[in-house]
Length: 377
Image 1: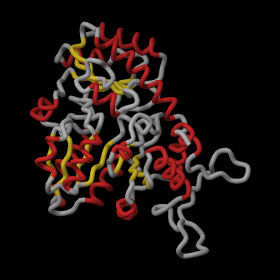
Image 2: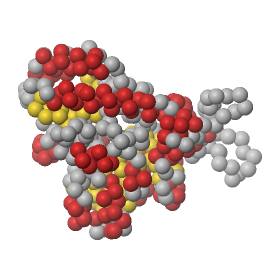
Image 3: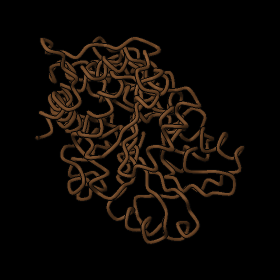
């Protein structure tokens, strides 16, 4: 089956007359056989199992796990692989929550974390020799770095490391890391997989059974599986993933072109713009440019930036991304505020840097809203 068909039909558990799968809300199950799969919902639940089958199918993996958040998925994957004395190599440009985990929490477990610019696989070579895991975001949050998954997977295999990819910004519709050589694909399913800003969820998809089983045990012991009801909502949402991401991407491309020509914008980062520094790599690795744009205002005056962010009618000033509604934020003071000034400067996160999650509203209405807000600066 092709992608859009898998989104609708993979993993669906139909009863005799249903066209929509039921929700199994039970916390525990009657035991006919002590070896049966479903005993207690923290470990396994039929609704969550249907979701996990769908997630594995659309990512091109064999196994999947659904979590109560993206950070829950990431933490479980890291802690199922890494222990005292192990080394994790990560990209310098990361979601703020991931950066905090790597900087402040993993070292407490004796895990060494090394940061590299993963846009060039050669930068990883010097650190890969004794690494247990390499983790990248592509496109990255918020600076839209494209890391070449296939080439990095070859480096990882050469040195015996595993490769995990945060695929949140792209979604499986645009990019499937496991097919490019990654071992694990991780999502904040809150974002494009959900698409309606009404679920907090995470996902990890695997090729290897042992990795999957180890992470599943840890999920149960940490107690962060996705609830049956949220699993149902995510099953429902994924059915429209392809349709939504097509519209996100077409809207974002038009808006990126508009912003690129605006006199109050200094630069625009969007993977499918000809001016994007890694345009050729993005075109090789991604099906579409996605719905995320990062751009810089020609000002570092916080009062003017606040005026811009507070002048929208349709677009909402809010963190998160990937919903049908357009969301805009300032990483410097919001999602990446915990970074030091030195870290922000190194990544190019300026006070005037804006992260824009383009929704699926009429693109002309979004552009008009942006135009009005830019006039307020």
